[in-house]
Amino acid sequence: MQRNWIVAALMFLATVVCNASAAQQDPPNPLTSKAEPPSIALSPAVIMLKAQPGASSTHELTITNLTYSRMSFALEALDVVIRDEKRVFVPAGETEGGIARSAIFDPSTIELNPGQAGQVRVTLTVPQQPTVRAVVALFHGQTAIPGNGSLMVTGSLGTLITYNLSSDVVVAVDKPAVTPQTETSNLTFSEELKNTGTEPVVPHGTLAILDDQSGKLIGRVDIEPHRLLPGEKFNCAVEYPNSLKSGDYRAMISFEDEGGVRTSAIKFKVQ
Image 1 (tube, helix red, strand yellow):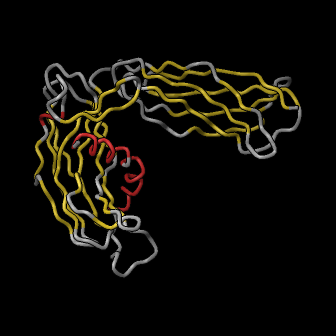
Image 2: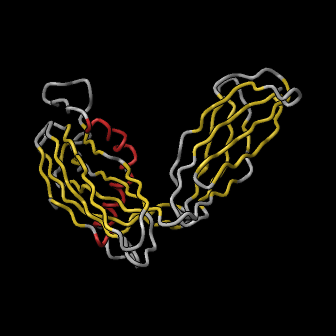
């Protein structure tokens, strides 16, 4: 039951860590500021490391209580593994070759008044034969606060820490697909990316629309970076924000990462 709760909390993580940058500024007092809804902020949201087996590192994490209640948290580490091409968060010690079991938190618990920020240091050691490349340092909420109606909820969030232990960075790119523009929707391109190497990678890219006859550039859209752990798959969908007049076009989609640049193309027609 506890593990299910942890997994549910981490699914909420992706939306909560967007507030992480707020922790680097003087936190607003939730008792006097009504501009922002109550929240919890954690900084940094992600730590990326290059290391070797046996290496240790220590990191300071800052959590800020932007709710109206005094909040308490217990610290724990979870290994992030890929199963069926998706992330699964596994309690420390349950994965052979995991990194989470080495975690030492100082302090191991923390309490914060409304508007207060606090720091926790986490030390992690890579085992000699590591099988994972990512850990979540989780602030496990211990305080129940009012949710919708009579529902009581707790707030938990964590910092993702990734490890690159070699230069084996490989991203496989599938053939792109196109969804035509309509009166109510934009032209959309999608392409599946899969990390087939052994190390985490953060590809970023560009979509370019060309006139298929002249080769003239019609428009360009930047593709936001997306982190992929080894074995993880992601379907990247990109909207072209402008309407195209009738004609023949070619879309060029390029992704760049430490392993190089990968470009694919697809021709399409606008009626």
